[in-house]
Each structure stands twice: as structure tokens, then as C-alpha cells.
Image 1: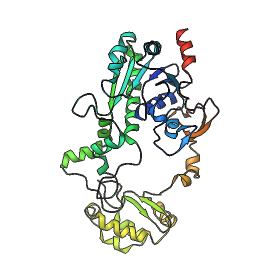
Image 2: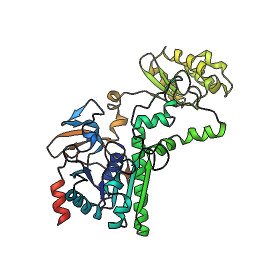
Image 3: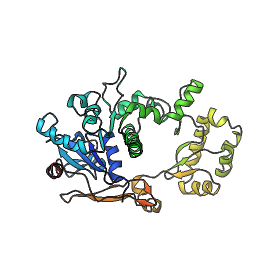
Image 4: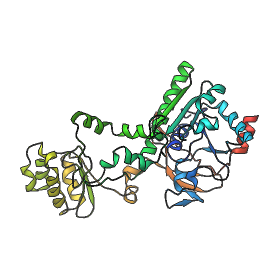
Length: 378
């Protein structure tokens, strides 16, 4: 039995941040009923955030909405609203990721829901919170990365570089799931409901807690290295390097020791620990040129034997053939009700040694509406 079995989640959210929280709750056993607009549904069904279409809809929608049910309702139609209220009255969790004020206008805000469901755990994600001059801005991942300093941490020195994933969306979803789980525990103990509020802005700041703490201590903006940057606050050799036949990553390590192990005499002169940071660009340039004279395998053989932190840089096609990947069983096959099957990742959490999988793929728009209506009106 999964830990959240018998918990009901009514999820008004769409696109990425909220649905990622719902996905995690579903993976842990909760029943997640996704409220969607008739005809169009979740914007993520048709806003193709990848160029891959699966069963007529975006691959991203299928990845993030598996293991859920779809209930269509026009929240401006009174009959549909009453149907949704029947679900909300019985929900353990209600959640959304609309901009501030939208759920109040629709009448499904926390204060309204609490009247009919006093012990509800109510979660919401906004882009910028409910206060301040930015609160009505669109909460989109790239915009949040740009506004919060994140783009000045990735890539080599020069212009801003965004991350290659919708990292703030996913992180906000993780934070919402954490808050919901904490309040479900409290509800079990104290029989109290709760309002959990997460903003993508605050999640982006929290992601940078290490760098922000350092900035407040010394008052200096982080400076990325010009070559092979991987962390603005770490010196050489930290970075990714091209070799004679691929790429390898090097974490922290003594520069003279690397010089000895790699038989690179030019590195032996950097005996002062402080040089690894203050002269990191010239050290990295020497290292980058030297590593191209040998293969990834030959360098790793030498460095790993000396307990130097390093690794080959793998692309997905190579990674997924590795025994280290296969042993984790991270990929599962799920199926939609129309028989369409696809492979995706499973829940990454193990409890008592057990991994949680599900055969249930993403729902077709509104496919569960009638069955849910019959169930909740019974």
C-alpha cells in the first residue's frame, strides 16, 4: 500500500509547476482528479513545449500528467460548478497555480473552500507571490530564471545563460508537494487544515541559497570562469573538459596532484591553494589543452585510481545502455485507456526499499468525468 492511498486531491492546476506536484502525490498513492476546461483542457496538452507529439498531444503533458484522472468543467457554468463543489467537499487536498485573484473570482479560493471543507489542505503556486509590484506578472520559467539572477551562474563568463530545463517550475512543484505533505501530517495530529502558498520567485531564490549567502557575506557578484565554468564560486579544476574522444567532468582537486597524475608539468607550479581560484582561467586553459591529448577512458583510469572526483560526460543514448542506469529501473511503461503506451520515468522515492511504479498513463480530456459524477453523486 502506498502512503497516500485513500487521499483525494482535486487539482485545478495546469502546465508544469502545479501538475508536477500533483504527479508526485499521485506517485505516492493519492487519487488526483485533474479539473480541465471542456474542449481545450490543460494548456499543456496543446502548447507544444517539445517538438514531439504523442497520441495527438504534447509529450510534456503525457510525462507530467500520468496516473491522474481528467474531469472537465466550465467553472463559469453553474451546473458544472456544482459538480466541482461535490468533489471539493470531499477532497483532502485542493490545489491550483493560477495568478493571484483568479480563484477568488471563480469562487474556489481557500476561504470559500474552507467553508464547506474546514480541514482541507489547500495549496497554490503563483509566479511572484500575492504581494509586491510583480504579483501580476506571468509566472513563466525562463522569465523567472532571468529575473532572479540564475542566468548569471550558468555557462562561461560573458552574457547570461539559462538552464536547459524548466527548473523553477519543477522546483516550485516540489516545494508545494513538500508543504502539502507536511500539512497532511499536521492534520492527522491536530485535525487542522492549512493554506500552503509557494511562488516560483521564492523557489528560485531558495535554489540559490548557497550563492546568495556568499553574496551577502562578501558583497561581490559571482564571477564565472572564462573557460570550462561549472560553478561560479569554485576554482580550478571544477568544470567539463573535452578530451581526445569525448568529454569528462572534473570536480575539486589539488592542481599539483593533477599535474603529477596527468603528467602535465605546467600544472606543477600552482602550489598555492589560492591560485586554484584566482588563476583558475589560466589553469583551466592548460588543463583543457592537455586533456585533448588523451582519451576520456585513459584519463579516468588514472584519476579514479587516485580517488580524484571525475566522470565521463554521458548523453542519454549512452547513459541508458549503462548498467548503473539499468540497475535503478528508472523507466516504466504506462498505458492510456485507448491502448496507447509510452515509456517515462518512475517516482524517484523509495520507501522501505520499495520503488513505486504505475501502469496508468495520462488521461484523455474528460475521460473520467461521467464516472466521477456518478460516484460522487451516489
